[in-house]
Amino acid sequence: MLFANVLALLGGGVMGLSSLSRSFEMVIIGRLIIGVFCGLCTGLTPMYVGEISPTAVRGAFGTLHQLGVVIGILVAQVFYYSTGIFEKAGVTQPIYATIGAGVVNTVFTVVSLFLVERAGRRTLHLVGLAGMAVSALLMTISLSLVESNQSLSYLAIVAVFSFVASFEMGPGPIPWFIVAELFSQGPRPAAMAVSGCSNWTANFLVGLGFPKLEELCGPYVFLIFMVLLILFFIFTYLRVPETKGQTFDEIEQGFAAKPAHSSVPDAVVIGQPETQDGPPLSPTEKVPMVDLPSEKQ
Image (tube, rainbow, N blue to C red):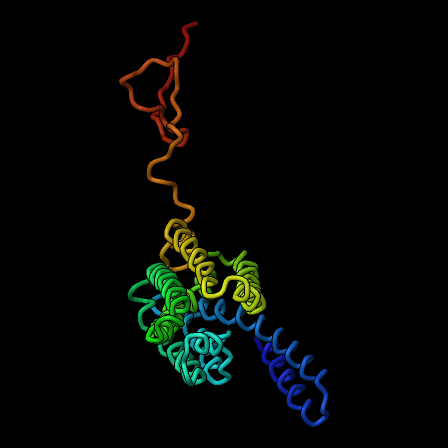
């Protein structure tokens, strides 16, 4: 983590010097270094925080990582295509709606911070996925009908805010730290690396592919996200366990526990008569010694 912070300082310095040198190449190099920092930081920080945090507040401390991320987003206001969505909805000042989405982003991360140890990771994740799916459906309806009914622009704003709020209730913060809870000490770093790579790759694909998808599908593009969210909800409901209030050892034992009703029958010994005698004595069990009678000459 110390090395990752050195990369952050280095990348920021290179981008800062780009204005003096009037070199766009330095901006690209600086962004590349910052990208390496983000990848390392988002993998190492939740894992380390989960390892050193008390069990009772491990989820809340893990959510603090996401809070730092969304505060950075609020400051930079880099929010994927939200301004364009508000423009299509007929909002006259879409930049203010975008800022409002950033505020909602931050506020509901704080809400999740207080709920994660009460409601549980699995419950919040399911609620968030369901809320995002419903919000995606509302965005589709409002954006497809807004030209014939301008009042639906308000529904579009509410749907975007609801989508952001649902994301920060569960799917935003929880995947960053629940992976560290689900894996034991040995495979945990590798699992966090795969998780972080998957998260950032999905982020990249959405950012790169959304404009083309919107061009092809129009307002119905959000139905694609709704279908994916429903699939994620089903997978979480069926396969993801609750880890609230459990130590790493207890979580590991839960995965290793034998099912209560096994489909494999117990072994049956055939061909030996039943007996009322007790089980054979253990080799370690002591028995009294008996003197044998001496033979007569």
